[in-house]
Length: 570
DNA sequence: GCCGTTTTCGGCCCGACTGTTTTCAGTCG
Image (tube, rainbow, N blue to C red; front, side, top):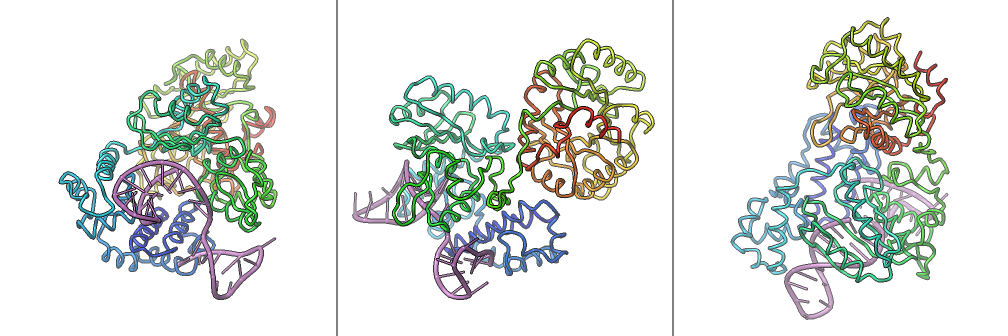
């Protein structure tokens, strides 16, 4: 899988060309890089089919370069550029306030090639000798270096929620705040956020800005104007604020929700229709008259587009779909009738079957599926056959005490050789068999693919859980041929899990899209180990499902119970 | 280097904030 390597090379080429002051080409290379990045399959497969130029942003010349990388593992053009420009652009660009123009100045005047050189030069106050650089710039860049060193990871979506809530509540206490919304990747439901963007409707901007720059936990005020401000919190998170008038709130919300590529394409569509679009509204190109701006809905409408939900705004085909009136009718919270994959104190959960079931019933679910561990992870206190019997009896007993439907089942390990600890005949008796990998995650791709496919083909598995086993910011995904796994799952009537644990979100939206194309169906699960997981975590899976463009027909949780039971018996 | 509901040539998204300037370039989102 050379996709990410190719993305990196294309982006690096864009950086170098930008530094050389080449016009337009950097944008072309970046666009091509994004096209490859969002590919839902191995680029070598695309190449074999001769369809490289079908990738958005890839034309004749970049396709040839990609071909060279696939064939030889190298790119002569890139190596030549690197020889010409011996600067660690990637590293230097990561410093806030440092862009291509300053980087080239630093190199020409002070021979600064990397972060180390830069730090040394700043400490000797050498930057001030260059025209255009002053004391403040030096200070800013030093702070930036320190920040980058201490800030390696993006914040989990679930960790951003309480921060968003607190800031919203702080502002909502004041009557000069008419409305407050959070935009950006948070609104799009991404699994991690780099920063938070708040939009506030107010006709007293000075008061809003004063409140904003005196929030608790501020480490640094990065910018402070009449309509825009930026702060950094002590935990490293950057918060951006825009203060707006009512007539422009919708266009600003649209703009700051992004993503960037979606915005760019949207503006191009506007231009083609004789408008110009900015965060201040949709205007007639000639008369400059405001056409729309109050709400996102009216802007999409004026552009002859369906309303596009934030989760889909990635420029991955949603604009064409909105033009053709063919956007998916995305699954919503109220469509979810029940949840799969819940653990109890029989294995590594914290609560009893009854307590977990009561919580699910209280939340209005129609069913809950229990899936405690069976397998070789001693850490999770797995069930042996004797305890499994007692567990199943306990579920039966609990059924009588509640209205909610209880489904019995297990989460069983797919062992190294692709076998499971329990026989197919025994598994067949359970309502819901979930299988997953937990150990030996570093196998080479061929072996790992065989392992999982062998399990899918030889055992009655209803749901393949967390198919890549990635843990965001902690553990990379396993090396597996997902296309083959998805095809095997489809053939054997196995649903693919969208695991809602905020660290997992596995499958992610890219994989979901790929699996949907193959024809797979999905199961939303909580992977709950405690009561709060039942309440919160299926929502993260739901976000991922929406980002993947899923509708109720794709997701077993949305079907009625008799259909669900029938499907699980297949 | 890419791309086309005006285009196979000539365009390529738009505006605020900052620092260092004497009117603007660079960066960021």
